Length: 344
Image 1 (cartoon, rainbow, N blue to C red):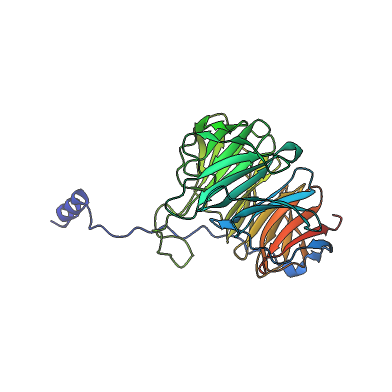
Image 2: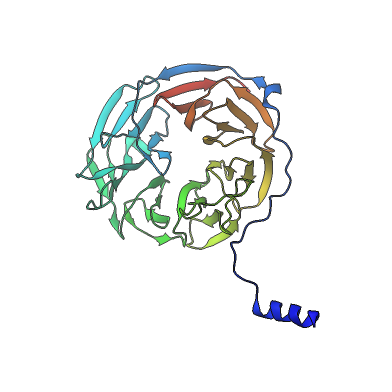
């Protein structure tokens, strides 16, 4: 009789209930950063307060390929181009219409600048354009609905995030194709311009968390890998990073638990435990640099992610690499710094 009841219960199914992810696999303790050497830095320049607009936690900043100028989308609804390292303003490009603010900027060759203008109200229509060195419009993006929440300017193509990530022609026509990924929050493209990684936006209904700070929803966030010449996702990884970045032809990703390095196909090459949430992540040469609001910068060796040194910078909101050994740092006081790292 008992066996029959058990079989009946299996056949009918048990009552529905919220599903939870199993506890994460045990991980090694994060390295003791207090035992690492401290690497000196030189402050080359610091700005006054700059109210940089942030779209989905990504400050609107781009550095020119020569490392001599930056573009910043600011709360006055204009894009400001400034000299480095003294932050002297060279020109400003105003919003083309009411209700639009810069959501992304990207430099090309010879001082050209692409800007994605995104709506801050329901009635505005998003747009994007390429501006010449004087600030005049050279090309407008034309084609399917344009929403440039992130722009990556390759030599002959653009990668645009907004809705689905899409690849566009360098002359602004497009899209050539879209990736089947409607919730991408951040993109990174490898140095060769052939492969892309996207981190998925955490859906807003993921409101429940377990004791391991993981969503109790079965789909807390993922990493997606793709080739830029195809609309297909080539690999999906159940990892929910706060940041992704290109590291040469590889990629790095980090959340509050792990820093991981992947090759362009999505194969994990190295990992190291982290002791807290990273607020910024960049790769610079053979180094990976993690910054936070509460702790120092930590420099890891790219090859195996072994922690090497700390840098006495706290209150870090975002980082951008300036080859070969400089960093652009945004701090909590809305100031930009150009710092020179010491020798390895």
